[in-house]
Structures are given as C-alpha cells and as structure tokens.
Amino acid sequence: MTHIAMFSAQPYDRRFFEAANARHGFKIGYHEVALNAESAVLAHGADGVCAFVNDTLDATVLTALATQGVGFVAMRCAGFNNVDIEAAARLGIAVVRVPAYSPEAVAEHALALLLTLNRRTHRAYNRVREGNFMLEGLLGMTLHGKTVGVIGTGRIGLATARIFAGLGCRLLGEDRYPSEAFTTLGGEYVSRRRLLAESDVISLHCPLTDDTRYLIDAEALAAMKPGALLLNTSRGALIDTRAVVDALKARRLGGLAIDVYEQETSLFFRDHSDDIIDDDVFQRLVTFPNVLITGHQGFFTQEALAEIAEVTLDNVACVQRGAPCANRVDD
Image 1 (cartoon, rainbow, N blue to C red):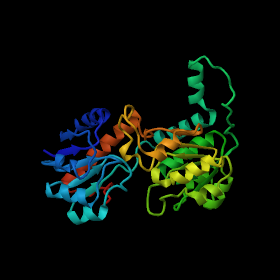
Image 2 (cartoon, helix red, strand yellow; image 1 turned 135 degrees about the vertical axis):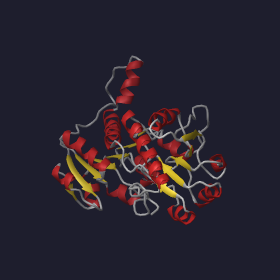
Image 3 (cartoon, helix red, strand yellow; image 1 turned 30 degrees about the vertical axis):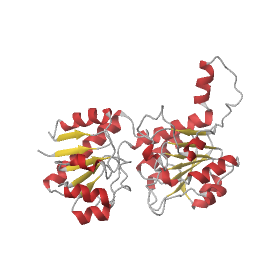
Image 4 (cartoon, rainbow, N blue to C red; image 1 turned 120 degrees about the vertical axis):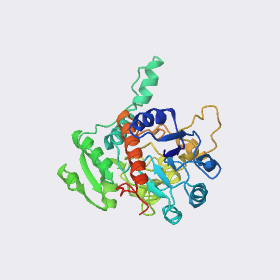
C-alpha cells in the first residue's frame, strides 16, 4: 500500500483527501507542520510526500527525504517554485503538481477583492454594525467602461478577463504566449508599459519565475496610471512590497488588494491572533485604509478543493504505476 505523508495539512485537506482516497486506498498521514529540514523526519516510512505552497523543498530537504526512501513529491497546488527541481531529478524524486483547478475560483476571488476595495464594503459593513450610516469615505468608481490590465492570460487570467468583460470593462493584456480566447473577448495585447499607463485596475496572474519576480517594482509603480488599483492573487513575490508601501505613502497607488504576500510562509494558514507579528513591512501594509489582504484563500472553494484532491491522488497513482504523467515537472 502506498504511504503518503502530507504536510501543512488542515482539517479541510483531510476531509477532501479522504473522500478522494476512497477510489485509491492509499495510506495518508496528515501532519499540520510545514515541511522543512526539521520536520522532514516525519516522512520516515512514507513512499512520498504531499506538499503545499509554503512548504520548503530545497536540496537539503529533498536529500533528507531521499535518504528515507521518499520517491515522489506531490504538490497539491499549481506552483512549484518552492521545489528544487534539479535536486529532485538528481535524487530520483518525481515531482507532480495540479497545474490548474477551478480557475474561476481564483478569478472570482480577484473580483471580490476588487469590489470590496473599490466600494469599501468591508468598512461599510463595520460602520453599519456600529450604527454609523454615513457615506463619507466610502466613495468608489464605476467599473463599467474602465480599463483593466491583465498580466498573465493563462486559465486563471482568462477566467478573470471574462468576468471583467462581463462588467463592460476594456481589456488590455500582456503574456509571453498570447491567447486567441483573450482577443475574442475584445482584449488587446499591448506592451507592459502601455498596460501600466492606461489601466485603472491591474490584475496579476503569473507564475513566479526569475523573469516575473518583482514584476511590479518601483519603476513599474511609477509608470502606472495615478490612482490605479493593483490586485495580486498569484504569487506574493510578483510585487516588491516595500516599493508598494512607498507608492501608497506617496498617494500614487490608489489601492492594493492581495491574497498572497512575498513573506507569507511564516504567517498564512496559521492563527496569529494572540501573537506579536514582527514582520514590519506586513504590519505597515495593514495600516493603510486602501489596502485589503486575505490569507491565500483564492483557491478555497468546495469545487477547487475536490479537484485538487482528485488530481493529486491521480498523479500519485500514475507515478506509482510508472506510467507517463502529464503533470510531472521534473522530467
């Protein structure tokens, strides 16, 4: 029987994976701790590990896993920038992922962030609960007719573009691999500089690579349309957070809504309500009234979690059979 050690496991992971595992009958050990050099020992006796976005899978951890007989890493997410792929290949560890799952889930969350940020519904909610029905400070803009720049028009970016097209927005896009579906929506591919200069809203939907790290830096922020709103539901390090803080302080950036944060590993998916958070950059961000942060929940729908569990375990079954796997990334 194949034994899987799952790290960063939450109660909802257990529910959905147990349901999906009814077809496979794997033995799954659930560990709440993140995978790192210290916790790798918990994989002892397992054939493989199942990891998530904030687990550490560098050469040191992969070597520790390999010495314990671990033969595969099953990422239950699309991103694998936290995995040393070269080290995995050298050690003979197969790496599989879930390349796409309910792209509409993340796209809808991007919309929710934008609508909340723009119309200040979170602030209005708290005011009304306190008996304050004043509208001053809640002024937003009508999105119909505004220009939305979508950077990254893969499945999630395209799902986001469809939503904005339905709102009557003008679409500008940037992607190394242009999509005919985007242009069919009425979208226009333009240079990054033009997209930054003309967009009222910019939504990021890119993987994190050496080319996309700090895609939004001080220079990009200076090139943006004054007062524009910036959304990020992809990877935290697409944005230089310190540069964003400066742009917010200068009143140049109109607002920021993020579901990811470049230093989120030690923060997200944990309860820190009784802790002192010593990340000064994050703490500065939350002081701005025009900043909205959620804790990496864009994927968090019933449909997406079911699909993640199904695809992850299918990937494991494929690897264990020695069959070709389309979702393998170490080949």
